[in-house]
Length: 259
Image (cartoon, rainbow, N blue to C red; front, side, top):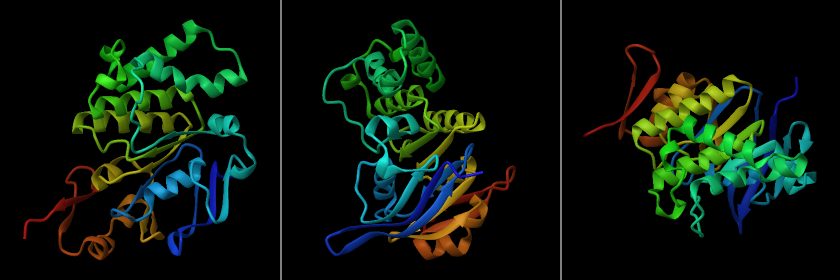
């Protein structure tokens, strides 16, 4: 079976500075894969290249066996959805209108009635736990609430692959857990997600596989407990963090360390 996403020998540079160096990995159907690494490692750059928002110098990206380079914008939007790190609203659309933008590509492919759009939008709001916001303007919401609205928009786009760049960065721990649980459930149903994430404990808990990037290169890839080894963590963060394991799940726990 071919992978849903195949990234091969991807390179990206600004001027003479290489930000991504020979990046290669795959994402299979049903997988939740985390991209982790320190600030400036290249996580957001990688996500932008895969989404098609940023042209890359060398390499190949395939989605469902097709080269990203030959797909139209609508064809890409039917294959993958993208939640960027910052989704600032420029106009005071209300929450339901904002979620409705997620249907654009699907509507180019088949007719979706206004009643069905409202039904699916409401269901997405309920999944994310923000149905009480449906009449609010997005510009009046907090940063975390806006992020949840845009996540709901990503859900209604209903693509095989979801790309999310730091989706939990502005969320409290309760909403972070809710978003990641919804994402996990979507993958259990057969969709796939590639998530750039800073919270290593969240990555260890929810991701099937982790890809550790440092200085634009893949440093490690595999199961969370293997990638989040004490050796790897020490290399990245020296003695500023402590590595332990959860007493119940056995998952790796990364904690700040007061020296």
